[in-house]
Length: 482
Image 1 (cartoon, one colour):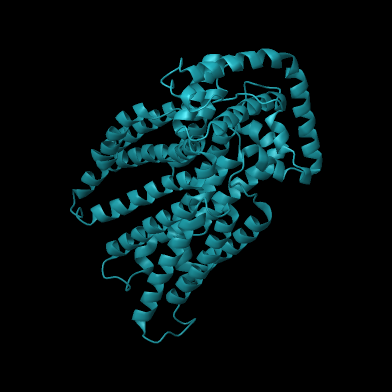
Image 2 (cartoon, helix red, strand yellow; image 1 turned 135 degrees about the vertical axis):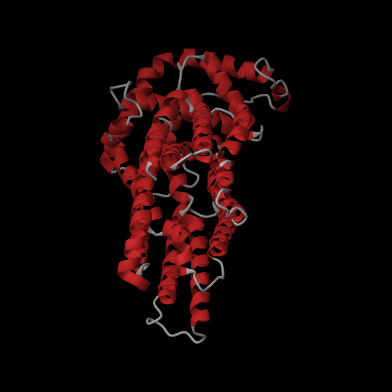
């Protein structure tokens, strides 16, 4: 938790400047050196230093991975793919819990820590086949660079599996329109993506507040208190404390798998609110089990232990159905390609800070409140439910520009439309030349002269249109906003 916030800060900067793929390679190398040093640590000082390095890499990953997945995934499947990162994390936690049952010897911890560099070594070769984010690739370089457009179009078609050519054309148009809007929004080009510039944008402040509160809610709901200290309040429900932690980790994996199945079937707000209310009920159950004076249960100690175990399982399950994956996912959906890595970096720093506070403060809460330890978490969940209901915008299936329009006031929308209109008028003199170049680009793609896409011409006679007659920005001005 100490190295995490610094990794989160570096992750946003590195991903913006050098690209998502290079950032992944760099972070994997950091994981390797941190894990290698940890496994061979001769003393406590080295252990602490190596843990900070691994924490740095973890914070780096919490910024980079959600952004990378969100930019590679088709809009209709962003939720499912976004949940996969959460599924991989909880699967790793389960694997660590299971493996640790066989390495309880004085030197067994070195074998466990050696898994980190081993996995990093396995991951490095596989990153050679990883694709760069098409959004980042298109936004870094000159707009008139036809080779870059061709590379982005090819990459999008490869990622989409040739299923929907119109979707590829539309995404390219969104990329181009977003870059043009970014040029009109700020005077200083050298500070693009900086945290100070992001915070200074008045129209984005509501989205920033939403991002921060979602991360605070994810941690202050007490989930890591359950993972860190489950052995203390599951004592009596299971014979072995390590077995209790493993049971919690197993429930976590099953719940996350279920979340991946339904993530794109329901609105994000519905899942968030349902998750928070379900966790609120679970907090009440845990409190009843911890403070036996509140409610009498026939069956004595066994009944209270069973209630603690069931309530903990419900708590973890409801967390993974909403509060676990969605705060990371929704952050990547609310901001455009220029701001998303920076926004995710701010969100990750808040998450690591709250994680540190909960991990540090829970033992003191437990000592002071006793069986009522989970009451503050229940109150946080009630506040979080109200906040999501009235303040957080829905993002499922929407572009970042559509989300922004939903959160802006009428005067802000009018000002933004004026800027967009000025942009279209400024670029109108270039539109004929652009159309000629883009037609040439499309013909290159259709004829198969670029890459291995020669079969595209046989599939359709109008495979890809990189520009429509009307600006795609007009689609973001629905009548309901008038």
